[in-house]
Amino acid sequence: MRVLVTGGSGYIGSHTLVTLLQERHDVFTVDNFSNSSPETFNRVMRLSNQTFDFEEADVNDADAMSSIFSAFEPEAVIHFAGLKAVGESEEKPLLYYQENLNGTMNLLAQMDKINCRNIVFSSSATVYGIPEFLPYTEDHPLNPINVYGRTKLWSEQIISDWAATDPSKSAMLLRYFNPVGAHDSGQIGEDPSGIPNNLMPFISQVAIGRRPYLNVFGDDFDTKDGTGVRDYIHISDLASGHVKALDYISQHKGVEAVNLGTGEGVSVLEMVHAFETASGQKIDYKIMPRRKGDLAANWADSRKAETLLNWKATKTIHDMCADTWRWQSQNPNGYEPQS
Ligand code: NAD
Ligand code: WQD
Image 1 (cartoon, rainbow, N blue to C red):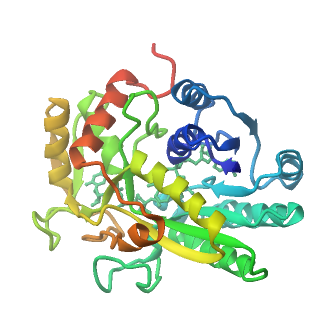
Image 2: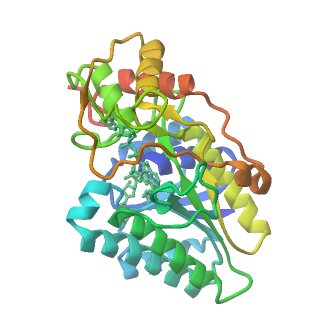
C-alpha cells in the first residue's frame, strides 16, 4: 500500500518505518525534525535494506502538504507527528492545540482533496485520565487530566467526525500505553533531547553514566511496592501493531479505538531491577516526592487488539531493558556524532 507517514523520524515512527518497509509497503515520510534527527532515516534504510522518499516539511504547512499529497497519492496515512511532553503542554497550551489539532485537521483536509480515506492515528492511554476501573478498556470514560491528553482526545473526535462524513472512510485510533525499548539491532532507539521526562530513557542514561541517579517519584502509592505502575510495551511490538492496523483499515470501514499495551502492570522499582539484570549496571536511585499529575497505576485491557487486529505484544520486560541497553551503549549520545 502507498502509505504517508508523518513524524517518521521520531521514536515510534522510525521503528514503524522499518516494519512497514519489511512488509513491502511503499512509504513516503514527512518530518520537520523538531524532535528528531535526519540520521534516523539512514539507519532505517540500512536496517530494512530498502529506500524511501522523505521531505522535511511541517504537517501544518498546507502548501507543502498539498504538493506531497498530489505527488505521492497515498492510500493511507499514519499520523505520528506532534508534540508529546505533558509538562510543556501545561505551560504552552496554545502551542499544543495549534500543533496537534491543526496538524491533524490539515492532514484530513489534504486527504479529502485526493480522496484518501484511511488513517491510523497515534493516540494515547492518557485520554482515559483517572481510572474508574482497571484495566482500562476502550469504553472506559475519557477524561484526560492535562492539555496534551486533551489534544489526543479532541484529535480522536475530529477524526471520528471526519470519518462520519463518508461511509467509505476508515480510521484507527491507537491508544498506546508506555512505549519503551529499541530495535534489537541497537541501531535505532529513543533519543530524547535534554533531560528525559520518561522513566526508561532516564534509567538508561543513569546506566551509561550521563546522570548520577534516578529520581523515583513517590514510594507511597497504593501499588505492589509503593511506586507507580504502568503498562510498558516494546517499541517493536508497537510498530507491528501499526502494520496490523493498516491491514485492518484497508478491509473495514468506520472508526475503531484500540489499546496497544501488554495488559501487565510493572512498577518503577521492578523496572529498575530488570534493567540492572539486563545491563549488568547498577542503577542508583533516590526516592523523591510524587510528580504532579502522576497516577498510581494503569494498564491496558488488550483483548480488543487481539480480537480485531490479531495482534498481541510478544516481548518481555527483559527484552525491553536489554534492547534499550544495546541502543544506549552503542549510541551513548543518541544520534549525535560520537565525540
Ligand atoms: P517523537 O517526538 O519521537 O516523534 C514525533 C516526530 O514528529 C518527530 O520526529 C518530530 O520531529 C516530528 N514532528 C513534530 N511536529 C511536527 C510537525 N508539525 N510537522 C512535521 N513533523 C513533526 O515522538 P514519538 O514518541 O515517536 O511519538 C509519536 C506519536 O505518538 C506522537 O503523536 C505522540 O503524541 C504519540 N504517543 C507517544 C507516546 C510515547 O510515550 N512516546 C505515547 C502515546 C502516544
Ligand atoms: C512512568 C512511571 C513516574 C520518570 C507519559 C505520558 C503519557 C505517555 C507516556 C504520550 C511513573 C515514574 C518517571 C522518572 C520516575 N506519553 N518516573 N522517575 O507518566 O506513565 O506517561 O509517557 O502519550 O501521556 O504522561 O510515563 O515514563 O514519565 O513515568 O519515578 O524520572 O515512572 O512517576 O510512575 P507516564 P513516564
